[in-house]
Image (cartoon, rainbow, N blue to C red; front, side, top):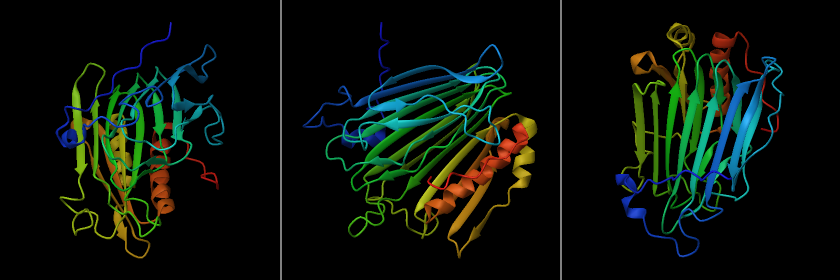
Length: 311
């Protein structure tokens, strides 16, 4: 028997109240518009980390795990794909990623995520990432592109054992820079929330940003300024790793390359929060990879390999 797809509903979110109209075409959460993906990494009897369980509903797709990381050839690597093109009106998605005790994995997306123009409703995503004792996960998706009049909301819950480490990153573009006259910060609303907790339910931190360019222009001084790309990285790791990683990072602004980085500690000894601003996707992704390499070196004693030239 096929398990039912979890409900994804943000109707109670105050910022989404103006966008609750049912689309004139396919209704909210219709087949093909209600994607679900469950991934479970575990150790096999020989101690090899494998993808033990996969459950998927279109348009979300995940292929079999690969082992292409030359620095950690024992690490299963997996790409999340979509068969439905960009996110559109009424799309609802949920992604559950579980890493069992002492297992590890790397997850990304096959390409950037495009958020199409929306007229009636919005697109919403729920992500549940669970790491058990001693687990390790790198979650590094490609950037998200909001188009003109995009409405998007995302809620990510990180449930992490005190002995586990998760590297969670997200990159949000300001819009389609070279489409017509450009669509920088022409989307309607972008609402993104991330929160961390322990397996027993103890709440550690919560960060939420709601961007409504029609009310508050992100390009003003003190917010984005001349920057066009925003990257957010959360690292939850054992307390003994936090100070070592923090001390090895030098935040700063390179005005020539238009790249800025910053770092702070999360409350309750939960981990670290790393931010990147930029105008070039490649430079922003490289800063994230450099930081991930530092985290991996600290936790696993191995660096991140160089990125594939076609990525």
